[in-house]
Amino acid sequence: MEPFDNAFGVHPYSMQLRLERAEIIAGNLANVDTPGFKARDIDYNSVMQDVQQQVQMASDARLDMNEHPLMYRIPYQPAADGNSVELNVEQANFAKNTMDFQTSLTFLNMKINGLYSAIKGK
Image (tube, rainbow, N blue to C red; front, side, top):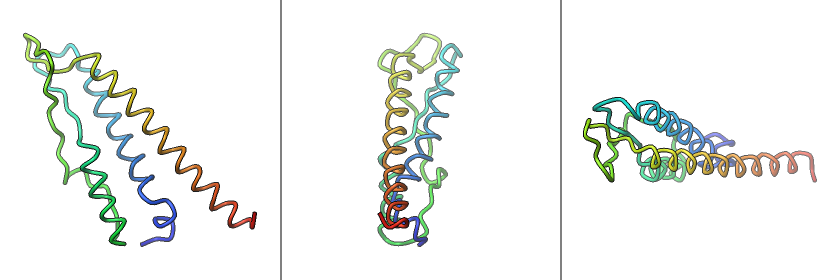
């Protein structure tokens, strides 16, 4: 395990996963009017539990999306054309994902500032 992995923990992996999730949700939003399109998402908590276990076991942690396939989102109100994208749900998920990304970025920034202070002897 790299020294930076010890210092940063799961935050870099969380940010990477949040970026990938943002792309998935953006794809859902782009296809809101595509007949038959099925909204997809990932189980963020499940993926991060796996990464957390890898970090705790001091193994070479990695974020492998092939081990966590995309899931289909079940709509609250199915559309007649078979599209399962619900604009308000996807917008809310995108906004929450963005806020969570910002939170991870803040934690990572605090870790970096702490390391910087330690190196400078402050």
